[in-house]
Amino acid sequence: MNISTRFLAAASIAALSLFAGSAMAQEKLVIGTEGAYPPFNNLEANGQLTGFDIDIAKALCDQMKVTCTFVTNDWDGIIPALQSKKFDAIVASMSITPERKEQVTFSKKYYNTPPAIAVPKDSPIKDASPASLKGKTLGAQGSTTHSNYAEKHMPDAELKLYPTADEYKLDLSNGRIDGVVDDIVVLSAWVKSDAGKCCKILSALPIDVEINGEGAGIAVRKGEQALADKFTAAIAAIRANGTYKKIQDKYFDFDVYGEK
Image: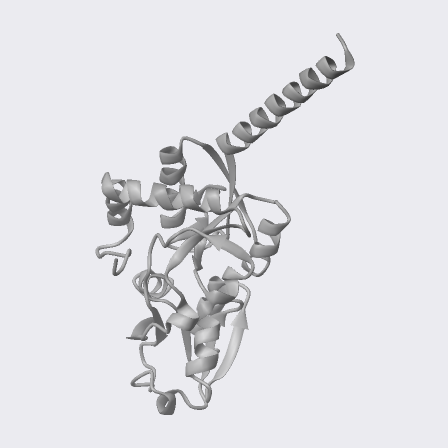
């Protein structure tokens, strides 16, 4: 075999190996989630991940015919963990916002629900107006659209940030803060539970598109548009074939997808 023939053979083998590696990469995906944001994602005591995000992610992986595994990561470090290739995609109720678009590439939304404020049942706060919230201490999970929302729209309240939703819920139920801001679904599920029987939804809040974004999407590393597009196509497919509604109805009695 002469040099040129050996070179072509080696190049062909390298190309085939690259193709095989690429194909293999598409057959297996690692999904990152928080595991502390029920009813969307939650790590149970038995080590199982449950919630709407998790069931949707499994359905999308089935639709794309890929094998998916899940890992949990603290919320405030979840984008850096994606960027460092700890996992391939984030399915964790992450709102699609202009700020985050600078760091990651998103699929189209898979749900969109408004923020809300919850207070103790005996709270003197009557509404979510700036005047009613002036001087009150409000809790929110840090590094979220909800903490950003409170900072912008409730400037006269004192904002206390928490690493997880569970921690602000504990402080509210124990009377250490006056109210909390989060997704209406998260707060509604909590106040209907035994743990949240202390409290009530004061009001849904108007969506601020600049802060709340376009809904929750699936984040992949910046520039991985092809993978984001596969997730988008899979979202459309499970909505069309009834799988999305079946999962939605397991958790909610209303349409979480929002306006088309």
